Amino acid sequence: MSGKGVDNGAILPTDKEELCRRIRQLPDEMTPFVSDFLDRLMDYDNEPLTEDELAQIEAANADISAGCFYTLEEFNRRMDALP
Image 1 (cartoon, rainbow, N blue to C red):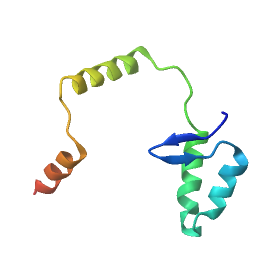
Image 2 (image 1 turned 90 degrees about the horizontal axis):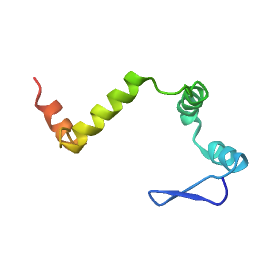
Image 3 (image 1 turned 60 degrees about the horizontal axis):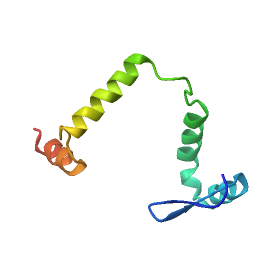
């Protein structure tokens, strides 16, 4: 990857040295979270999606297109209203 990527206005690191520098700058209490994230990233399943998984994604996309979803705010409001 060349150059710097932009995500929501944040500059993303483009090489391992920059990534390591940014990790070293994190507070020590963040170490377990970063370690857990990296473990999960390393275990990432890179296998192709099954037909069933693809069908589930298509169904979810159709629901979203039809307006069948809750915003985070609506979800939180509904959760707060539960007994």
